[in-house]
Image (cartoon, rainbow, N blue to C red):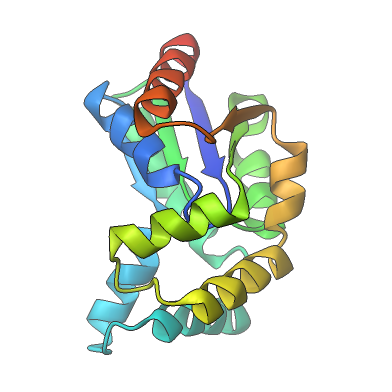
Length: 182
């Protein structure tokens, strides 16, 4: 039986680490954030903290809140031909969840990664991605993603991983979770 697990969490919670661990275990990972980063590059836009959120919102406004999920589902279906387990990294909204549930039914579940606000901000400040920025960018990004329904996804997830300790502890918890799922 094929299984699809979407990872959600506020910015800086540890979704990327979770995805990296999955890749190390040989589990295919598709990043919704990478889809936005690719769109920014294809448009030849300057990478700055505001542009990623702007493009994500423009795509939602033009094509609907589930646009990325609708684009991603057939790609994952193709990967499920060769794999029994696929991870979607960075689901952020109700519409995306609804498309995935409609597409895979009981073979789809959500894992939420939870970390405290100050811990997340510290991690974002340290990682240096072009879509990150200062405190104002961090706060507006949180608000935007909450507006898409991210808090609801987190609170209704089938699985929750706490990321309050060290990276090593979180990596171990991710490994245990992923091995239990596959």
